[in-house]
Amino acid sequence: MNIQRVDLNLLVYLDVLLRERSVSRAAECVGLSQPAMSNALRRLRELFDDPLLVRTSEGMTPTERALELKPLIREALLSMERALQSGAEFDPARARRLFRIMVSDYTEATLIPSLLERLRREAPGIALDILAPSDMSYEDVERGNVDLVINRFDSLPQSFHQVTLWEDTYACVLARHNPVLANFTFNAYLNANHIWVSKTGWGGGTGIKDVSESRYLGWVDQALEKLGKRRSIVVFTRHYLSAMLLASQSDLIVTVPAKAAQLVGNRYETAVRQPPFPIPPIELKMAWSPLLQHNPAHRWLRRVLVEVAEEIDRACRARPFLE
Image (cartoon, rainbow, N blue to C red; front, side, top):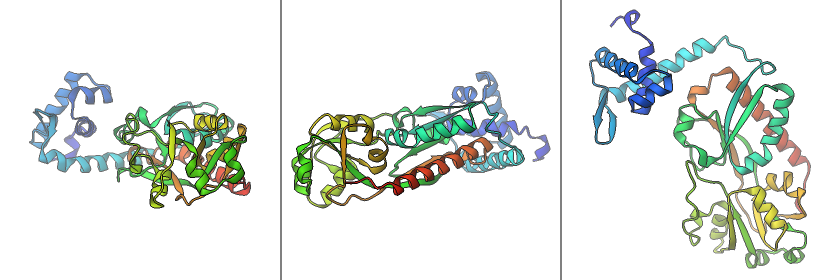
């Protein structure tokens, strides 16, 4: 096969077709009409002498040959993208674009305000679209529809690039009038009522499945389970800000990442205490699609986020606040 006679646009179409497994969705992704994409698929079948995608009861299913081609085509397109962007420059002061970032409520409260301050100073033409974990799926990230995801992740697809922004411990936030403050022991913690707060799942939350199993409840309750203990939870929420506000107005305790307590909790009439039992620290990670790895604007934003996170981490470490 002579590569000079091959329409390289067909490789782009094949990549999208294998990803979407739908002629209509693939056409929409690349801005073609459905008949034009159908014609591209016909030409691809002729080029590779293989059906590539076969209609089955489960939709368009790739053939064995198509599955062999998928990583090869993806790598070829990434190499072409790197070659085309190698000399490109990004001027943040003159840039006009939107970045879509998925963050948890914890990240939105602790990291995003400092990021926005930096952007307003250095890149006033850049806008942010802040998404919640339930607004999207791993496929949205893989396709590059979302620029970055920043959260605490149990696991991530191996294809994603990732970096740790900071490590965080836990703190307990209570109203200053909460009587448990007079003797904040482990037994006092267990005898109190609590607000549970944690991340929302990807692609739509399902709510609490079973309050009797700590594996559904996250890091704090898993740490208690290792000690053979459980706490009494009377409020379940996915929002750290509202959890700390609720704690400031009641006799409840909320146990949250320390940076959230330090940067946000002191805005309310609250006291902050060290948890009376060990809780493993958490890592805040930033992840993105390999499709965006070499994009100049994306590289710039990732660098800024790492720098902002380092500044926040240094500032929090320099101001001890746990009582």
